[in-house]
Length: 368
Image (cartoon, rainbow, N blue to C red; front, side):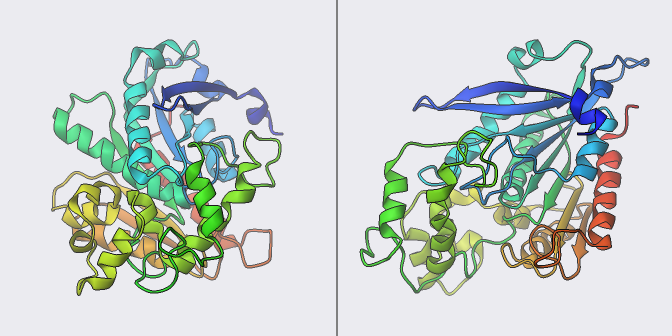
């Protein structure tokens, strides 16, 4: 353990309680640099980072931020925040979006200010939102929410300001395409009782909502055992094309409408009441001069879990709207930016991390 890690303190703050009584928490990482008083009375920026796991597994307690990037954030004196959120099945994307909003409400509240360590003075108008894999989807939604809050409240009047969006091999670029949605194949729901995964999916929908499902390798973390039964969700989405329906809380409605439609444009397939769950619809509607924050997308070109094209689509949409956006393509690597079957990272991955650090510093600066 390095010296910084051993002296960084982590506050676990409850930011909301759902109607069912599930408590939602966020982990706040404060380094010594962050906790020291600034001679010029300046304030600390914040990096909010959403965990991987496809939105159906994962946990805020996992150590998922790449070490090079995490070290730079903490060394620079900024606050690193890892919020939890409810997980898909039985939760829908609507509830995850509500959790995002509840967390931002918490950051604007006196409860958050009262929980700060001595000497920490956060600048809530310098928030960079990031996400890894499924967390990239959540980060897209979070950046959109912050952008919309500023538009609704007027320039300079909102307590929270998003200065950047960072996505590492993130979902959310385009989920209205195969394999995320398709017109053929089993659905694994009540209309398909022969599906081999029907029983598992039905049991998960019948259970209560959860927010912790770390990977089995993380047995030291709360809720790791949840992941063992939740793994078939990914197979269900890929085999049956039901991700979009899971997000919307429907069972086959989206898949059916997609199969009947001549158009494959998301806004023409997805009912309007669900548009807020699809970043691609929002990005497509952005106009020049929208003020959407600078964005960096990092993705391996041979990613077999989340297609590289997800990031390409987001890049193209934001470029069309005049947003400052960069896609850092890492050639020949898998989902976690490594060569298939190897643990070590190639030089190109380390170069990508260096670009990310530069991007974060450009967005929120350095305080030390």
